Length: 401
Ligand code: ABU
Image (cartoon, rainbow, N blue to C red; front, side):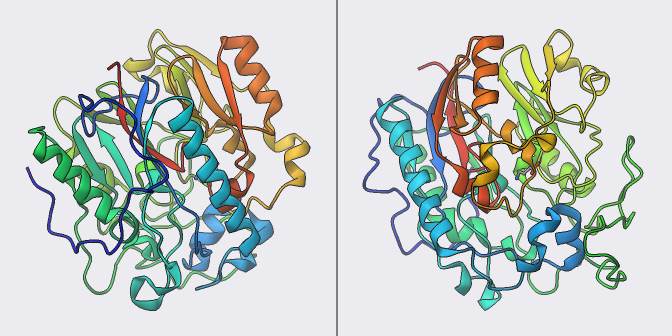
């Protein structure tokens, strides 16, 4: 198989600072879960990040109310936050390479104000939303947000060509499924844009392709074309667990089902998150058989409905981070995330996990309750842009060497 044709990138996608340090016997892409030893990783880049310019009903549906007024077309995130976020991402990449011997790729720098034919993009700091490895296949998301339509090509297109080339030279069977291009007007907000403005703090309830089985709410996109972010899905062996959300519709799930290789299957978790956008702050698998979950978004009963979790140790986080005032509140604004972002940690392997350094209560709980070795790294400025370690990465290879 070959990737669909793309425009070659203008710049190298591999940071010269982080040269691969691992043996060449490693596959180019291969991952079937979220916890096997991490061997190759894509880490995002924050430069030039802009507040996403989606319509108000989408912003109301998915973003915390405090900062919504800043979500305007071409409005950049504060420069000092972006600069610090890049420092955090560089440091994270250095630690992954030097301490853990993980091969790290970085995307090219993109001026997001100049993308999308001048209407602007969002960020290169959250690659998890746009790309996912399933076995030997890299899937590109059919993103719902118009401002993210070209994100994968702009930031990671050259990287995708490079790994395809590497795989070809090594005779590996690797597939890259690029998303179909929408040329012209997108229909995904049809019927939704003329909703009354209402209270800007009120959650939008549009009922277009919802409700799901456990919530009466509707979604901020319709089901006229496939839409999904990869971060609405997680790998648990050959079962991929996902959710419908304000950026993932049923056609998106059907599309994903159609492009992933056999024997992988997709099952949907019925979550009760009215602001659903990405499943990786709702569930966090630590290792085979152990999963932490957000009990206000999903129940143990719902998790157990899925065969893959039958004999798992399923643990709700025993406190509600939304009700906590802690040192994290002194940090930069979480413009786009809830405090459940604490669960957006990234496993190095079944014993080691990367957690934001100010999340000390969570880190200690993982150490004491699960015997994890917690790698504490600064990431609050990346958090400010919309995600934590899981969001800011795409694991390319997981598994024993
Ligand atoms: N992009 C992950 C954010 C999830 C959350 O705020 O809960």
